[in-house]
Length: 89
Image (cartoon, rainbow, N blue to C red):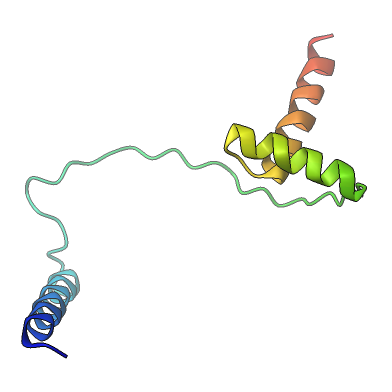
């Protein structure tokens, strides 16, 4: 390993050791740190197995990819959208 890499690794390790020490001493927050509110959603805890043909699975994957999301997320969005429509009717 070249000397420059060794020095960089040693500095990173020292920075990490310093951060851990600050946390352990109760000094994890700087005076300038700002407090932010974080909204937590309930975890999704129910799973519904859905059987699809290979063709339909690929169609779902293609459409999801175009939207930049996963296929199960798209299926969940469609399902929840349909349930919302029924509530409005």
